[in-house]
Length: 236
Ligand code: ADE
Ligand code: ZN
Ligand code: ZN
Image (cartoon, rainbow, N blue to C red; front, top):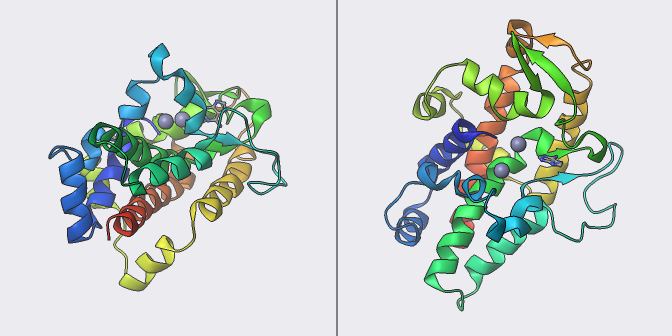
């Protein structure tokens, strides 16, 4: 996601933290909110010191496969990234600085895991190589889902987070079920249908937004409540 998407995920997660987890997270982040640190992993992307983390934002695998059927990538991927971050936060030997670093990375990666095209296909790099027109602007399918759709609403991240459909306790628990592997395969299946939603070079606008906005909202909501589930589990 772009900046707004990540902040929405952070804000939604914040609303679903247990007391204990909220207290721990506050302490590790020196009082800052999840939303305010949710873009840290993108902010350091252009710094060559952090090159190794670039492949941690996504995973690509063929349409007819599930995660793990293909040999893992040497540089790591988003699933391995999330597992690494959780491992570092579980490890009592991890220093305070490292704990802060890995928590900020985790908050970001669980967000990205729910942008369907962050679990796309290699041949078009998660839609980055599929050019489209968004209203009058040149864009690509990946950027459309990262930010164009979200920004077109012109709402702040707090407005978006509060505008998401309300859920029963039961629906919340169902949404929080599963694990990183089932979540990545769910995104991957969505990505496959999103690839079929456009033809390269197509001009997209209101109609596309009308059809897909619900999916965007649902993915942001899932990202937030599942991030909360992971943190509540970590800081029990
Ligand atoms: N670069 C290559 N593949 C990508 C993907 N699926 N998402 C984001 N960036 C990528
Ligand atoms: Zn992206
Ligand atoms: Zn990212």
